[in-house]
Image (tube, rainbow, N blue to C red):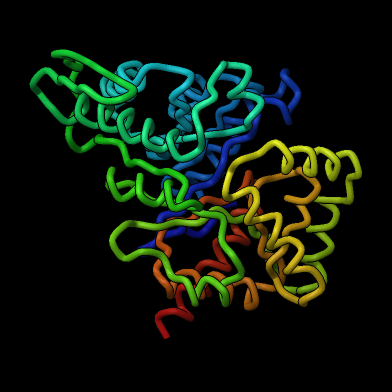
Length: 341
């Protein structure tokens, strides 16, 4: 099936499957399939997660590039895992080997227990200070033909040069969390796109994104012609899971992430309000973003609310099949028509 294109002024990213959620024998094929579906649907790129329990995101990104022609991997980068030179080297190497652009999703935190296992006890806001230094070194190495020197609180490099150099037209886009004041400040300092987990659109209208930076949201979508069918699919895909609920509650106790606490609060506020905004998958530890569920018109109206206040980048949840991206396309096209009208 040939899906319609997600085009216009919006940049749409999908998300690659996680290795812990797919049988090892099928994982490589699953990554390749989702990448091809995403490219066929017109997505700009695809998010690749990182944490202690997942396979390396750079290797997954190589699989994505080898199975697509234009799709840009959005590689999650955690400073505690690797030196900024290594990130710049991988970015330049993808450019040299494949002539392809990638995006970098700069991660300040992650799961607290992951950080503790690596003996990283840096406080939340200081992790963003560290992330600014880290990202600046990467940007300068990829931007400058001259050797780079940097003397910061967390990182120091002296006359470091990137070889092979990266073509300017392949310079990576930078994303990072914009859910906290520290994250927003870091995004401004780096010229990055600040991505948040949104409130219902009517509430985001009262607190629009900062005009000084590019802003995006992370959202899942299940849309159909018929409202009842959409909700039936949603509940079949994300059934009640007591074990997942307990895991979510435990994660809440140990997390210092602003977005995690914000979503948990919204989950309570959004119950029984007859809204397409749905946090049941998040509460059952099935995914980490809100969902919009309903018929095309209702979902499109919610998307139009986000677009109208200034969100131009949308990162979707992992698509279960190519058909789902077709339905999401339909909702976005209706939303763009609503905004234009």
